[in-house]
Amino acid sequence: MRAGELSLRDHVEGDRHTVLLGGEWDLATGPDVFAAIERVLAQGARELVLDIGELTFIDSTGIRGILTVRDLCETHGCEFGVTLGQAHVQRVFKIAGLEEVLPFRPAHANGREP
Image (tube, rainbow, N blue to C red; front, side, top):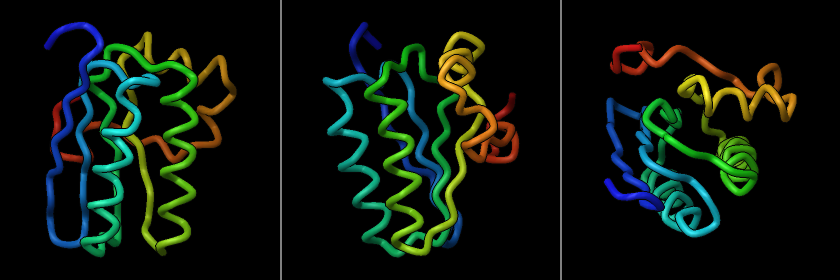
């Protein structure tokens, strides 16, 4: 994957969707994430987990995006979770004061090894 690219994969188990994100989530790639989330919610997901373990970069657009996805899930009656990111990505959440606000969970809870 080249710099500035984002990979998206949707892993489905029943009503649970895990959207695996890799690469960079920024202003340029944000619309791709929201298009994927809209598809997942339109399919009637009861649980949505953003797996950010393979993100190499996230900026304020991505942080705001995660908060927006959380709000969309709440509106649709869909449980929301987000996996822990790599140390340098997770540090952004710590600096923003969001580690205690977002429902982080270990990556292995989603079938991916930590």
